[in-house]
Image (cartoon, rainbow over all chains, first blue to last red; front, top):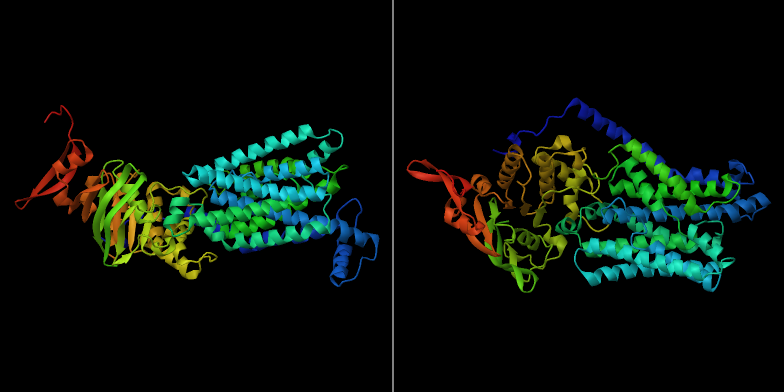
Amino acid sequence: MTWRSLPRMRPRSAAETLAALKETRRDGRLRYWALLALPLPLAVVALAFGRYEISPAAVIQTLGHALAGEPAATAAEALVLQVRLPRILAALLIGSALSGSGTAFQGIFKNPLVDSNILGVTSGAGFGAALALLLTGSLTLASAAAFVCGLAAVLLAHFGARAHGGSHTLMLTLSGILVGSFFSALTSLVKILADPLSELPAITFWLLGGLSDVTWRDLPLLLLITAVGSAFLFAVRWQLNVLSLGDREAAALGLNTRQMKLLVVGVASLLTAAAVAVGGVIGWVGLVIPHAGRLLVGPDHRRLLPISLSLGAAFLLVIDTLARAALPREVPLGVFTGIVGVPVLFLLLRRARGGAGWAE
Amino acid sequence: MKQLSVQDLAFAFHRDRPVLRGVSFAVAANEVVYVLGPNGSGKSTLFNCLSGVYAPAAGRVLLDGMDLTHMAARRRAHHIGLVPQNHAAAFAYSARDMVLMGRAPHLGLFETPGRADVAAADAALHAVGLSHLAERPFNELSGGERRLVTIARGLAQESDVLLLDEPDAYLDPKNQHLVQETIVGLARQGRAFLISSHSPNNALLYGDRALVLKDGLVAADGRPQAVLTAEMLSAAYDAQMEIIYESNNGGRHARAVLPVRRDAVR
């Protein structure tokens, strides 16, 4: 008997054929490219949007002038170029960084419930910023301290897991949770020590996240890290599929799992640290957006990773624009992402009903 | 390939408790070898050492004289593939995407599968008779279909030797039969299959050879009809077993292995 003469397990039914056709249409190329390009038109609208209204046409004209090297001629042009544009770029970059790193973390931890804070990056960064604000009160130093302490937290989690040995992924998760809790406790200690009238509000506000203080100076490092980090994750997007099978299978398929995971964890942590350093603690993006992406284009990281990057950018841009323009008082981003992100995820999950792209 | 030869392979998690204590055997192309043995006898460890998940403490793995023991993971995966048991992916990849992952050893760090890889994956799915399920989410397939898809992934890997970790576990009789008939059919195409199993009956029915492990050593190795005797199996499993024979043309042919019940009415 050869495989040719083997009985098929199940003949293909009409319903299956229909489902397959629907699937093809659902994952259409047009939709994929539209989703990828989504942040662009949103950015133009966001530039026009605000307490001081400027028409989208005027925004495009201003951008044209700026690209031609002409200085801002009017107050409206200055507003667009000096205030709104850096903030919008920061929102796009931070959204991409958080969502891209969340996707990568979920992939290598083969767990759809983890986000960019799984290894304590955000908690470490929060502590660094809080300490710097307590000691110096400088926002620039807070940013730098957040970046350094965020990466220090991941290193601590990494070496903590190595010291234990055993199943690496499990130990890394455990170690990350411990390090995160440790830094959260330290942050609480800093808050207790802070002056409740001057330092504590600054610390609290920073920890809730926000982009109101972003200037052009914040952008070069954020742009560099986000661009290089995203490019790396994009390049290994298919390997993320293989890594998500687990260490044993990925190793049997010829992957150097230790080295690959170290690289991916390192890059994803760097992305998160850069994002937190500029925007403060902005939760939910790294958890919610990869899920939304999976519902839209499926779990294959070859499509999911690019979509996560653009969807994260679009999401944070919309949230930040609403935060600065739609309400009478600016709402911290970390609060808004939770208030908007959680219901959105609920709706997405209700709609998905089982087809959410991860296993039961 | 012509021959996979395993020489004095040893492995231990803790120095004083060795799992493999010098395992030696050889497998030729087109052979289906059932690796039997009680729980803890070292079957999974043997497979993990062969596929490079664990580094053996001593011994060598040779393929046509080429030493695979300390070969880089990617190169080794060209020669030996592993089909794990009881697999569920964390994310709902399609069957085709699952099979496509078998192409990993053929792709560089920053490469994604191209048309030739997709063609190889589709051919592998066709070889196990599941082309019609290519687009379906892997996790929604039945146990037997999933087993066949992971076997297809092993085929897409294009390695010379495939290690199958209990492909007959958790399947109903029809699917057990289907999966193992598929393997036997595929083995006639130049590959060698090593199958770990808890069923001596399946070894009798489908195997060219049986390799019985006990306490990290080879307890028996040979044609299933010849080596799977009541004495050997009773000693290996530490439980009294009997063989049901069928007589044909004056000879006798083992058909089934059964445990002996205490106080059984005979």
